[in-house]
Image 1: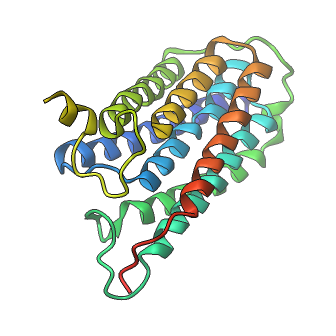
Image 2: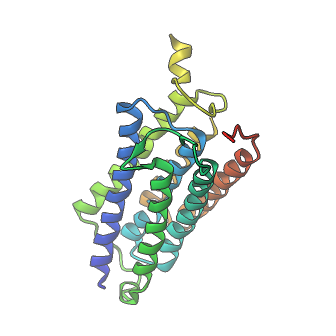
Length: 183
Length: 52
């Protein structure tokens, strides 16, 4: 795998992360389902997955950049598995609505496991690391991907501030705390 | 509030990875990952309202 192909795949990874963050926003805004604290923590881990690809695009692919995303995916899978286990008893309706038969935290667990596998597969290709530390000329496709995840993360800052306000986030949030205080 | 700060920290890590130095971005990443794990462990010790 060449360095430029690896960078293109990293940019595609950023678009995949952006899609996950957009779907989460869609559920929040269209279905009016506010994310619980554990759900927010999983969303944060999805956003953190983007740090590795951003470093790869900016400085060129390095194993340590993939390790950054691997550590994040492992933490995210642990957080998601806890939420899956909290609702595993038969008869438990789970938290929030289901998408294609699975709740969001189950999809999150699957997503983090897929990320671990994808990152391991990327690490198999040594040729991408052999071209030294040459300055990286980034194309518009990769730059747009970076800006997209940055913008979605910034929107999450605003959304979480509106949802939780300046206090601890409620376990089962139903209204935006900051908007409730303002009205 | 802690989740807002974590999201903000992630945005800062991304900005550091894109505009800053590699070492600074990696250091910020480590701090943010540890903070998110600490937040998880803090909430993991909450009393659970289980359905069984």
